[in-house]
Image (cartoon, rainbow, N blue to C red):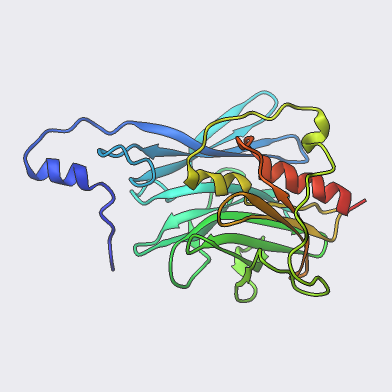
Length: 286
């Protein structure tokens, strides 16, 4: 089994006999799910800031909170306190049980892969790796529509992948396929024209929060999936390699159609990809 040295600065200092203070930690990547019962589930990562100041390596742990009307329970997602990098959590509701499930990117000893866990009412099940193949897998998303459930993720940095998913068990039902933002399958021929959006994100009800972002974090803000149990189709938003435009796809039972392309505003509002996906889903499912 291969192991990645995640904190070379600390290893060097320890070898030299230098006493080190405990590395500081910071919270990141919180996801929130509100169940039909009104219970709120939150999952976030506590990331170790490495000796070299690199916030993309080091170990991390996933923490969670279950919030009822008159109570709040917090804990650690089982198995994520083992020193591996557990990052980018995403929650979804299993309609067969009305219990939450969790996917995230987890270090498996060689690469980052997508892991799965479900909440039983008192705790999260132990992590189970559900994606395989070469390279690292990041940024999982779940789409759950009337006609099926799918797992989406990013592989090799710019390969946007999907596979049908059994949300109750976490099993992938068939092999993964790639979404290519440069073209669409089916009746669409070639890329749709670039246009300014003919709508207001969030319907003009909220002012998007603008923050500075590193180039690495921009894609995570723009890569998005929106779905709903009252709609057969899903919406998938894929950023271009230069993060200057978004390809908006409709997705139904593995069939993808490129609907339009949108320019990315500068600076990028927080959650812009999610907001665009939800807006297109509303228009698609009318």
